[in-house]
Length: 198
Image (cartoon, rainbow, N blue to C red; front, side, top):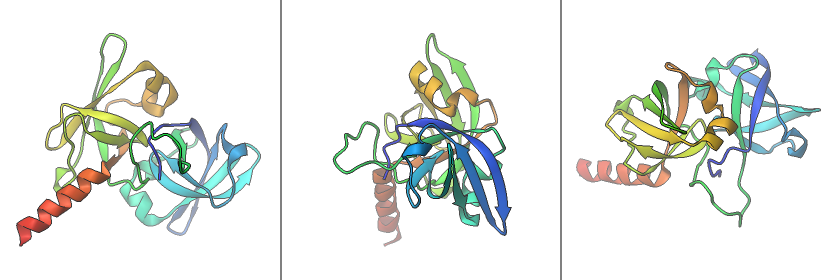
């Protein structure tokens, strides 16, 4: 379980393919605080630490993860949003995030807004994921509030702190991001879907 509050921006230092798996090595300021078997969210994807070497640690993404997330596009020196799992009893500063990416989206517009930025993303609405105005959304692991919610797109407003301390500062039109929709909204949508089938 995560909160969507990014702790550090890691740098991809090595990528190794093994059959259908991808071993991703990351250099990060939080590496010294990690341990083997620990869960860390990478652009919102919960992965297990399998090796640690100095300031570098390694996680493994399997085929299904690569197919459903933007981890398949990673290259050496890419920046990755990192968050360790929340501790029981900690303050929940973002929202409830599972680390299970629902689908990817594409950045379609970036506008500066007199001290902040508005990013717009489009996604495949046929997968039945939805956003609501002022609802929660996780973009590359970052907990954000939806503005301008539409059937297949939405926008988020990014303050300077978030822009500087996440990989939002590397986004451009066409950037593919990971989305995790609000878990409460997903349950409601599923209940409505089941009700309509009966």
